[in-house]
Image (cartoon, rainbow, N blue to C red; front, side):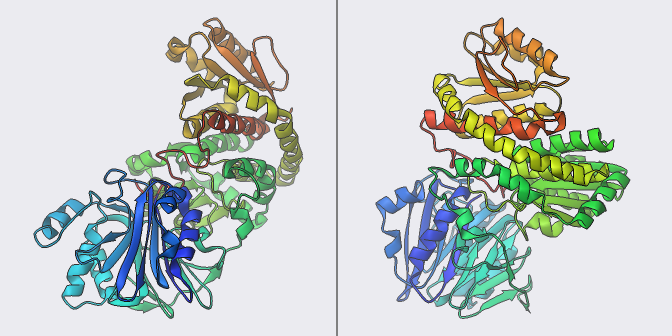
Length: 589
């Protein structure tokens, strides 16, 4: 959460920083700001709101100088106010800092610094420029001051600093929060995500915990002791046009429509690696999948597939709770960490504990070189390109695809599984066209309802939960997903006249029981929305789905639910790409 960018180059920094911040806005959009160095002073503007709103109040592009830093904020400490927006400064306004993460001991540091320093914000970040100021006043260079400051900080963080005394450089470091360096022949960047500068260069280096980078006429890397180290730039294979809307109103719609292709791309895996991982799963005494949010629902379906196809039972533990089970993790445990960004703080913390206990780690991520990818013994990449919408869509079906591949590999039916997945892709494309108009009408019809309930059984229970998550994320509607059989154990008390009940009821062995539960809600006046191959008299609204084998139903049931959430957000005047209070890459605990 929060996005930072730093730049040193041969042309004005502000327009490039602004463009980069637009690419990082999915990480935070409470406020934004830029600081540049020019003619011996820091020029800066910052304010609350999304980038376009901040630009409407201030001429960010006109800040002078070829060196600068920028930030988009997702608030963790302090209200969403102009003074709490980044960058933050020292007492003299000569040092500027942008920061992602949390300084856990900031109160202690602030108490120590306050007798000699003037603080103006409520943030934890502000201790950083004042610490740098102290060290520089004592004779340290910016590089040395950043190194000494980092040793004072507890928590997870990444920050970048500039100073008028060294106007040709940006110094940055990280601990448990992502930073990636990019460079071409004339320009160098530091950012929370390579998407920030992908239009300029796809040559990147990922910083490890405790490492430092100095952007200047050259790019210099230092270890945690401040000693120079060599790091090689590598090319990321994402294309710039993958990170643009390409004519769509919102990224979310573009990314939903990309799902069939995302499935095809996710299948482009090394068979030898799949076999090694499949054997590793089968041979492990204990297998635990850990993930958060949408990735956790993919993991629940993965658990079902492993059991159904390969007879291998495993457990799924949400990332934020995983560390509390660490006593049960040992060298006989295989941990599969699932995260689209590869930077999810909760998952990373649990994986660290697992590795300390001797566990083997596999990861399923989208971002090449991300923290979880580097921590893992083996890694599968989603290969679906950048996903900009905060609500995960195409990365979810890509994660499912990798679980299908692993399950079919363990069953020794990989070729059969691949062919069946390929056959489903055109069915999804046709179903989107079939449902598109009807879902828009349904969203308008239910726009005044503030409670939705999603029910299903078997493999589709996780899809009911995921559909509810999408609805609450981008429409701000209270939505709950649950096994249909649980309705009568409490939730049925909340159902009254007109309450929308989304019934995921494909024609399989769960159909009759799920429809019976739908009747229970209908008897209380519910408005029943049915997802099924055929309509049923119980349905007040019907969302048709393709007829596929039971184990593949999640791939065809989730897409209409994503579209329903999308159109419900539009019907209520929400921005589906940037839901309030949420950010895509959750890098704080």
